[in-house]
Image (cartoon, rainbow, N blue to C red; front, side, top):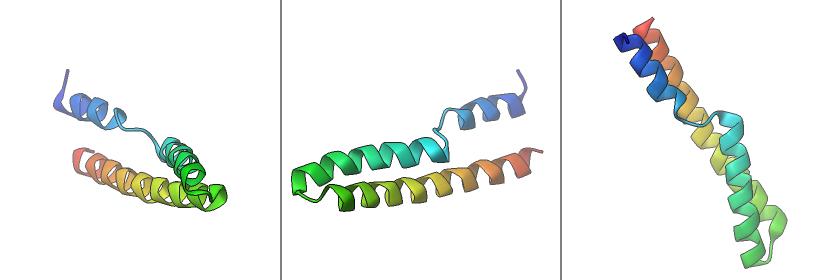
Amino acid sequence: MSDRQARSRVLAGFPGMGALIGIGAGFGLVLGTLLGNLVMGMLAGAAVGTVAGAVIETLRRDAAKRDG
């Protein structure tokens, strides 16, 4: 296995942006339920998931540009 393939497999191990938004929204639902404001918890969780997804996608693209 080449070095490029190995790096590709490592980057593929991270969830995509859509998955992170869903995971964040799920955690937000649970947190919102505990705090008594379901909608705000879901929105906050989705926002955190969006930011985390954007960071991971940026790192993934930068690594692909370096390797490619």
